[in-house]
Length: 331
Image 1 (tube, rainbow, N blue to C red):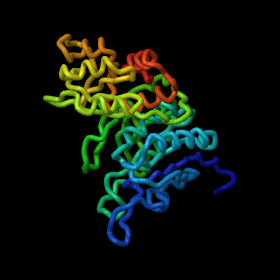
Image 2: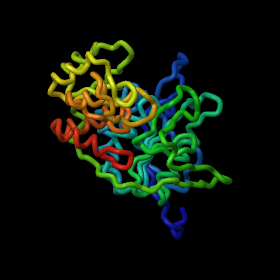
Image 3: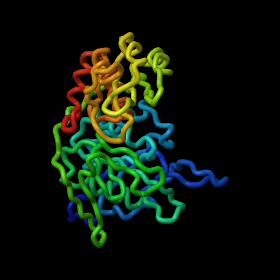
Image 4: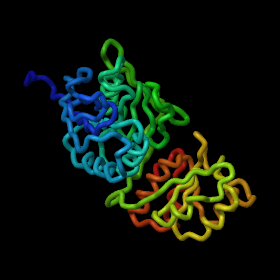
């Protein structure tokens, strides 16, 4: 580089595995590879790029402990970089992104991305997604937004992003939609945000120490598995029906436990609102001690409950935190 030219901005890429980092082995089985993505992606030469590989895993193998390890790495390197990209498998990307959103306290943008196709398939989407995520992470407009997800050019809020398709390249969405968009014009990024940054209050757990399970309600459910889940865990999230309703047999189980039971919905979109007063309706669940999850789906509610329990929050503090977690509030 010309010593008289402006210093290149510093980009960190954290590779964790997933389809974006996978290749077929000698038997043709697709597995994550430690080969550097920077050897195979679109030109990022105008950035000074560092690559970190804390682990190389398919995303179904990633645990909350791995998420916390990522959080610690991000906080350790932030003073040396201007933006951070995390490449991740798509199956649990929404959970990792939200754990980081809740807990990362850094002054630089953090962007997660991945791919739906691997490098040996036609039209591999990895190079564009990394290029797009890198430019989002390095753009001044991304300052103060905490953690976002970039996929197929769309920019999503980590609180609402979810995987909505098993194979499509546009596999992610998030109600009420993308918060921004990045495209390429003759090789240059064109970035627009549709929403302003919001205030975040990151939490500082010592680790992802709590065990939280998810159970799902269905027609005719009598609470099978709920008592067992409460016995072996520190708390439970129920993906309930509609705006947060359950069959009546679950009410005494919830009332009898001293562990937090958080009510989310199995519906794709919408809040938990305790409207109904029939046995098992949202009002009776609330009276039994259940905690409404606001707009968080079951997977994100689980991540938040893990963080709060790991911080030592009691039931009342957990309830207060979830009730403050509206669409505009991070915690």
